Amino acid sequence: MPELLKIEKLSAGYGEAQVLFDIDLALAEGQSLALLGRNGVGKTTLVNSIIGVTRRRGGRIVLAGRDLTAASPEQRAHAGIGWVPQERNIFKSLTVLENLTAVARPGPWDAARVFGMFPRLAERKTNLGNQLSGGEQQMLAIGRALMINPKLLLLDEPTEGLAPIIVEELLKALKALFREEGLSAIVIEQHARKILELTDETIVLERGRVVLAERSATLIAEPERLEHHLGLAAAA
Ligand SMILES: Nc1ncnc2c1ncn2[C@@H]1O[C@H](COP(=O)(O)OP(=O)(O)OP(=O)(O)O)[C@@H](O)[C@H]1O
Picture 1 (cartoon, helix red, strand yellow):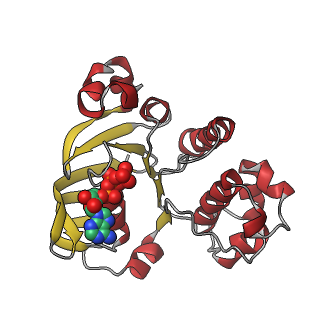
Picture 2 (picture 1 turned 90 degrees about the horizontal axis):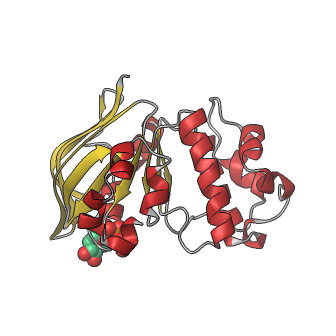
């Protein structure tokens, strides 16, 4: 499989504070990656560095052969980086359908396909963003990111704060996106064990450095390696 994303020796942070140190990461087209680590280790900062909103101190980022190291966030979005932020950021005063069509770019994903993936959203097509439950807002945020037809989708804790039944529904949709649709993605997730089952690769950060990079299937078979870095409860 051709390489989609390559990050080499990336160091980055905010202002004077350095958060990430010499991050190396490679992702092939059609592969998904779980980004794990305890609170505050730099997971969101790594995603922020890929979309281009941190201060870079060194290293490079290449997407589909194009060097994006010096590119603005807008140029990175145009190059095919889609992003679902932790706070979801949907348009609250637009309908579900308008949220989707407002950002649409040509490609295989259109509103009908998003509604096929999230039937709940189809039922709420004419509801305003602020009339949706937390789970529906998350589905809309994912749907909206798909509408730009990204080469790479970044998801920051998509299941955070949602009821267990909605978490299951979302994980099922992510599984379909990763496994059946072959979407390339990086997902930050607290439910380590659950996300290992959906993803091809895993990296674990500790104090801004990659301390473990492994096939997710291998980590399912060798759970003690995750427990070592995440603690027993988080690795479960
Ligand atoms: N905008 C910012 N300005 C300055 N420092 C920041 C900013 N955002 C995060 N940090 C710091 O960067 C470090 C890493 O934070 P980050 O949010 O990337 O971690 P995380 O692994 O995503 O944690 P969590 O699981 O709690 O979201 C923390 O020490 C945090 O205080």
